[in-house]
Image (cartoon, rainbow, N blue to C red):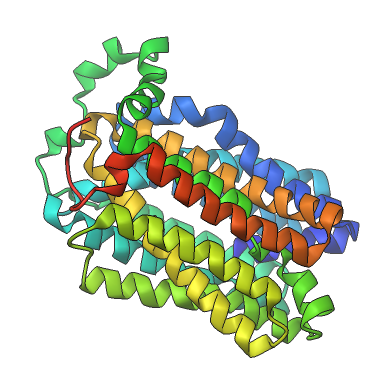
Length: 387
């Protein structure tokens, strides 16, 4: 909802697509700059407290945007400052959320918990933009103020979270915080842990390069207008399709989690993702394109659930914040740079060839990674395994 409202306001004020792109960059830069620090904090401070504080900050940002809009004082510079602060809050929130989930249930149930978390995110990605657009009709300030109320509610709920394991497994006693000030060794420990554990390194880097190359969703407006010859309603259906596929599959995985051949299933999902990208590029029918994007979203969420479960289960609790911070950076980089890569290659080679190249690239990366990380390919069950 907040993203839709910010996008509409920025474009209304500037009529510049470049300014819209800069909004995304303003949110990503804090993640890039704070990545190592936020992981250290997530491993040294109560994670539910980090969530509550971050969501309170996000509430203040939304409130500020709403009041500035209501008083007709909103300017592009103010929006950039607001989304940068929002990006900083989310930089701390994302790894803390990832690291907190495995502590809420017994270890065998972690993949299901992550699948339910993914289904909640997919539901929000479907409902949120549509609801934000509808609320915007009632007044530009309405979605901002609605987000304020929801963020406050989220902050209160986060503060009431009770972990499954003993509090000592999640929280660090106040007496231990003083000698745990950030050091070079502590801050870079997450990177070192990932490098030493090949399964985690393979899973994270596979997602990075596969999404970086195969991100066709950034080009959907061009496909809707120039290839499928449809209007804004068609673009809405195209954007909805991968989310519906992901939501359906994540609910299925929550009810029937992957019990065997987890690594091979992840590689297969990435290959299907790449092939679906190629098929989408070749489609000339709106309904066929929607069906293909549904498959693409379904394959993507299988990869996400396996990778997220693997990262959390193979990482000890005291390291999860730092490892999750690096994982969040990889995810943000693949999404943001993936959009940039898709736009750049489309400008160089043309819309359809660029998408085909990206899809083939995802398949090639998956096949290459199967050879480079044989342990990941042979991974059967999701759980703690040797280096």
